[in-house]
Amino acid sequence: MLTIAFVVAAYLLGSISFAVLMSKAFGLPDPRSYGSGNPGATNVLRSGRKAAAVLTLLGDAAKGWLAVFVAMQFATRDEQGALLVAAVALAVFLGHLFPVFLRFKGGKGVATALGVLLALNIWLGLCALATWLLVAVLFRFSSLAALTAAAGAPIYALVLGLPREWVLASGIILLLLIWRHKRNIRNLLTGKEPRIGKRDANAGGKTAPGDNRSA
Image (tube, rainbow, N blue to C red; front, side):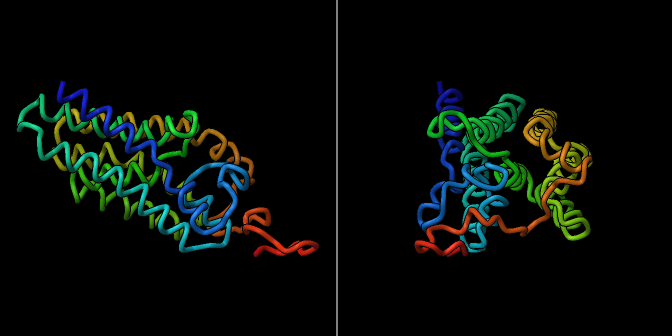
């Protein structure tokens, strides 16, 4: 029963969309209505409101971290405990992808995945973050950076000697991220993928009558 309670709680926590909450707080349009249509930090950044994007990123990462951190405080130091933590990690991630509060249409889960990895092992999370930053700086594509970092996560977990359940969980997260980035992958291959920071003219919030500029 405790395992089920943790998994359900993690899923509900993951279902909280900070992209939607921050957009409302900053008077921005729903992030699902512009850009990539993804309720995530990168798309919120296209509104031109960096503060909203940063808070979205932190919120989405924090919920992933919190769910796993709490589970680890109650998990036993054996395979059963490792399995509980892995199940919670996947539950909070799936909550972000398929949030009950948004009719199961959520984000791509990059920030939440980072929070999960940081909670599982600080070095695992930092290695993934460093990979993301390196690729993002070099190529300016958030999707490419996310996929590269996610691909490295199971390898980093193996090198660090983490429980096999956690390695498997990071592998499942990788596969889900690839699936959620199908359109991004096509855009990367065809040269249509927008670079980090590119602003969407329809995402600037309310404008005065007759004024086509972003507010």
